[in-house]
Length: 114
Length: 111
Image 1 (cartoon, one colour):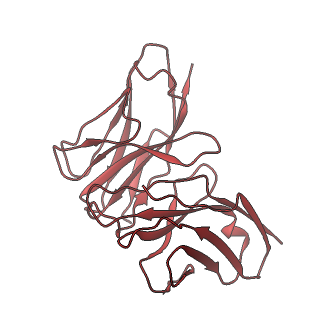
Image 2: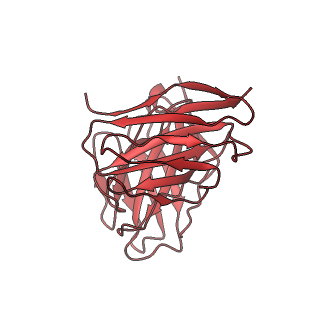
């Protein structure tokens, strides 16, 4: 079945450490997205990518970095500069960037600070 | 970015229809209305979307007001699996547009 796979499901970060969250899709979608969700809140956009080797900052990009070397993969690195990284991170994809295409989401990675 | 307003929570009994309202008085002519739902500890799931006309799919129906300033997601027969947070989101058609999630409506379904 086609879908989006996020790993790991749970991740713990030590102070001063960078961690990378994996997102892989086999839907042949062009666009991919990373969101952050805090408890009781909606999702906020961190980064998005419309095509390979191109990505743009979302609303809360500070302290995060991404790469898009392959169409299927869009990893997110939470750097030590992100002072409050504890959150639920969600990856999504869509056929192309646009308002009339639904986004497909993975099941998320929950990141906590040790 | 246009905003939406939804009730914080709603309740329903199993097998009954559920009407989830959404106000979007500042919607522009090119904004699509999307609905997603999210179960605890899972990613959001696409439910339905539309522009001007009412829409039906296997999950739900979307009723859009004539002036497009409000819409209603209709679950025809609620089941326990429909208990989730439902998000009403506006998104334009251009490649710089994005989904802006509010806090949604938490739907409780009772047996």
